[in-house]
Image (tube, rainbow, N blue to C red; front, top):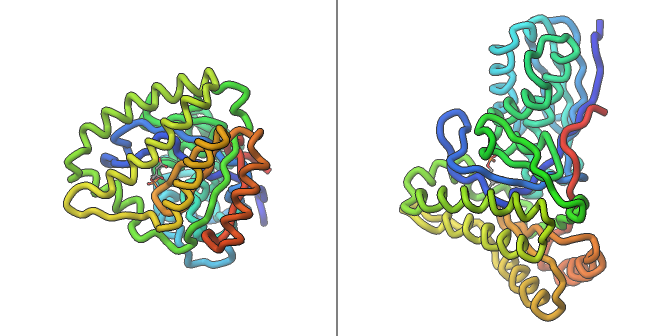
Amino acid sequence: MSFSNFKVQAPSNIALIKYWGKKENQIPQNPSLSMTLSKSVTINDFKVKSGHGELDFSFNEKVSNQFSSKIENLFLMLKKKYPILNEYHFTVQSMNTFPHSSGIASSASSMAAFSYGILSFLNQLKVLSTDVLVETSYFARLGSGSACRSVYGPFVEWGITSNDYAKTVLNHTSLNQLRDSIFIVSDQPKKISSSKGHQLMNTNPFAKVRYERANHKVIKVAELLKTGDWETLGPMIEAEALELHGLMLMGDSPFFLIEPETIKLINYIQNYREKTKAQIYFTLDAGPNVHLLYPQTFDQEVKEISKLFLSEGWIKSVIHDHAGDGVKYL
Ligand code: PMV
């Protein structure tokens, strides 16, 4: 007998100020702040029947997939706190609206979608002692740190108010639809996982100064989001992206994730801005792909730039996304 069939979705997010370095239990070494995406989402189809705490999770119809072990661990943590889950059998079919391995933070949307599905179900059973979104953010964080920010939108901080879960920050209405066009330089899996990157921060000689700087930066960025001062925010976001990649180059086990095309696009955008005054800025995640952030007034300019980069074969594809809300019950 089927008890409940429902669907949820959770978006990916792009950090403006990055989380890089963590303590035990996914507690960040510094606060971070991100923009939630709109079109790049994970959709989870839940089927719940009576059982004994089983979970059949598949991603793109594959039972064995890159998320299986993280999802299993997350489910164990959820069952520990909510033993009532042992009375049910969950079948979860998961899929992404963005290409597999496109370099978009897919574990963030995946962990947020799974947590939201289970916690929405528990909410219907009226067994949650806290708000369903706060609890979703808490558990999403245990799945993958940055996932806690995917619960809300359009702009979200983690580590200013609490290290346990994320919270929305206010923004000026002019930034509600801020664009993120993701130029896919490589669709190959990352050379170094973010878990490894976080771990290397433990021996990074610049870690202390980095964490102090990040603390100042999130406060400043949160203020600028409120006033909507994009011309001051843009350069800060770019510098932060290069600081993240700079950290990767320091220490005893340096590594770099950028590719020649990453630099080509960065140079192009900086020259283009200089020439045209178009307020288009870039950020990078822990990979070679370039996120162009800009107000919607520059849609046409970015379409032209993407046409050029695609026709020259410098990039594989482009995803035109924009700021959006967090998790949704479909
Ligand atoms: O959530 P994780 O463990 O995949 O780490 C994310 C790290 C960055 O994407 C580089 C930065 C961030 O804050 O999202």
